[in-house]
Image (cartoon, rainbow, N blue to C red; front, side, top):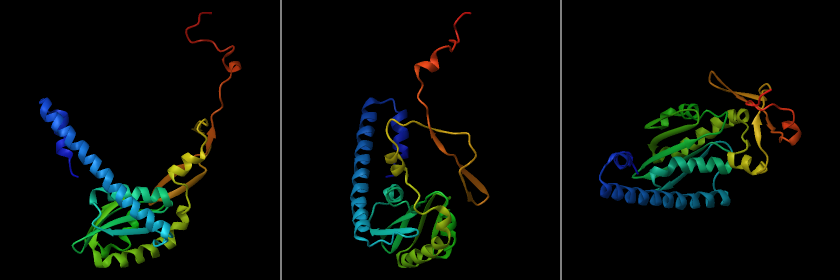
Length: 220
């Protein structure tokens, strides 16, 4: 699903026929990607519902032949569903390739660095990672990440609300703004500090608010 060059060509070509050809191809590839994502997500949902995945700590979910181009978005979907950091891996010819996404307060790259010797290669940052390793070492990766998460997840609020849950909990007619009050909570990512401010409902303006207020263009 590496289509960057064709996307660039679509926006730069002056040939209408070529542009149409590229647009149809890219649309089909997007449809295929969505189908691949949906198919694997159905399998992951079944695993979560059946309780075959330990949902405490950092989740490591793997399967055979899952398309590597959708592993990152699948990891994001798992985080949205569970509120836990998650790695999603695909096995092929004895090798496992994966992507991971995290939650606020849990540094995912540091988690991988804690068991760096299991990987062939890995990289990323606090919230997203990519990696590869031999399939035979995936059980060891799962166990060591669980040990790492057991010590650190309590500082990350492992039951933190996901973005979808926060949206569902906010009434559609309630507008929220950030107040200028001191931070309600502070977490550390290495030497960085991330501050979270309390949300306050925005007061609706009434007719009384507008009475007596001079229009900027009104003449005295």
